[in-house]
Image (tube, rainbow, N blue to C red):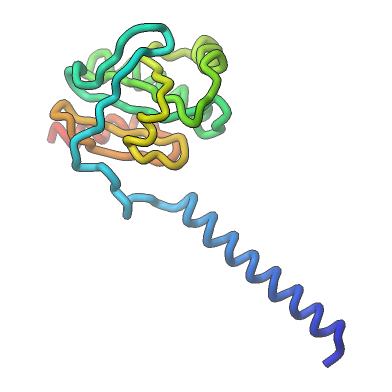
Length: 174
């Protein structure tokens, strides 16, 4: 076998191997994460601190359901899901549901404030990396639904919708 044939075969093999690795990584990243429930079914970590608007927030003072949303202004999925969270906030007013946002990965507070001013949303926003660590958030957007009993009911990795939140609430109330 000539050197050029061996070299071309090696290049093709490396390319195929690279494609397989990329496919495994992509499927692992974009796939269904329901096999790893994390803290679902456990007591929710407390979310507490001063919001970006200077108001004190403590998740233990929330009566009803709590939606804990992790986001950043540079996250495309977070931008896509934001209108659904605005709808969820409106629905939640009549359904004992509160949203709180936790800024992920040190996003600039001024950028966050500008984002909410432009896109709506009146829920508290906390900028404390410990919150993401306590919920073991690895990538965003990620959202947790906490029941009135303080137990994590659902974990959504990727964009969450109003229908997702309504489904979690309905399942709890059933």
